[in-house]
Length: 394
Image (cartoon, rainbow, N blue to C red):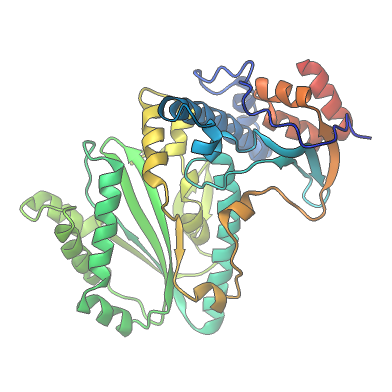
């Protein structure tokens, strides 16, 4: 028996502000206490993502009201409405197979850049697709290598300017005869490219990881030489700065060979070792390191200027693709085309409706920033736990 069944689709409550969010303060006790239990890592991560999303909503909604006062904030930034405003009755669904709860009837934005919740879901699916591509390459007689391209940057450069120059450098790189000759020599079959942006003491740091499927491995030094020429032409490297050029020669290109689906790299996130597919697909979940943090980290630590930096990131990445596959590569690997928006929608075939929520109940949940906690209650104790949790909020 569900809590209350509210029929109809008139639950568009996005204009009502949260009641007790406290978005200007660091993350609440729920996320902090959950992190201490390793066995609850997944639930703790979800709680952090939901609280980070609440902070993202606050920043984006404020910006939308300031710059587009004649529009609904959710029409300016879809992340404002994501998993917050409904398009039909709001359901708490439960999958017995996965022992996991999720919401139904809520809008989703499908943004890997702006939304911490959608990003996690999309990137996990993309990771599985990359695993499948690597397995296909192995069976087909190719092998995978990962090439990481980076370049110098300073704290005074805007993200938009760096992204524009980076894109220009890639166009220049791939138009040259030496590059085309290199690709032919190594038997290049295609690539998966991931765009990643971090932020550290030297400002914004855009870079890419490219997973190449080839017959033979190239020399990193040869790639670096071609990349250096492209970066100089694009204004990313000053050829008269000998110290920076020397550092570029050493650090600008990193090549990892003999990659397969069982290999693990030195990258880590929340003390978990990452495989090659995690490195490519899950770039936006990387947390704090000395060389920089991912912009979603701004929503968690909430230090000075983090809200400004997050907004610059969202606006600078608009229209950019996180993952690019060579034409025809997905078809060769037997992978279907699915949009980020489709993946972001919570849907499992075996999920059952555990309960339906009324307008007042959803307002209560949102006002207490308890979206993740309600899902945890559903997973822990089913409908009775959901009812008890709602009573405790009321």
